[in-house]
Image (cartoon, rainbow, N blue to C red; front, side, top):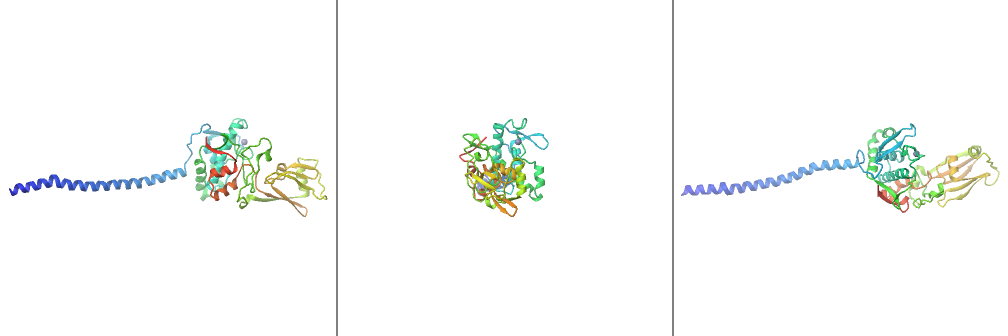
Length: 349
Ligand SMILES: [Zn+2]
């Protein structure tokens, strides 16, 4: 009987208690394993996430699928060669040529969006300008572009990779974005420094008045080296300069106002200026005398005529230093764009 009882206890132990203990242990260990798995999957995911993040930060190239122009044809003005390259890759070369990589990322993103818009506008409205190419690499004709190789050569070696990463980030994070007015890409003019206030396009080029290229004020522009400059001439130098295009010029330096600014634009730039017997546009005076902008005052010192110039560039559209200044004050690239271009939207193209 005792034997049977022992067998019975052993039976109970083997078939009920032991499995229960084992299952419990197993359950515990399997729970741990799940936790462990979660842990390990977390630790495994972490580097993956990091890889993903850093990939997002430093993508090799944008993969945005454009409605049109996934690749564009770029004319190299020095060689006359035409290079076909992906749209955003073209923009890496534009942003790095047009804006210092040291500028705030939101300013660089604004520049990328402006450059993309400028490109699309050129293709759609000035498509025949460069016969077999969409755009050229000259800042004076279209917008500046520089190859990665040439750009690297001009950067400090220690900053090359991080600078490039920032440029690529600015372009890729705005991939597909363009600036529109009434649903159409805008003529996205930009310049270096507005001197605190931009100019409306009609005051510079006449013709059509673009509703989005109005005069706006920006704070912080004076903090940049482009804000102020000086050019001086002797009386003879000045007359000879103007003689190149106006051979009939005569200046009597003994009169009270041998040079006189006759009219200003609403933004305070010189609209017309008179040198002796001839009166010319402020924009023409800027070109002839090599001034940085049409926002200038004239001072006399001995035999010298000094032009003190505020701002750099035509003053229309986005100011690059203004964009950086606004970014430093906390503006996003969308806010920067909407500040400089009146009534626009940012849309996917
Ligand atoms: Zn061009």
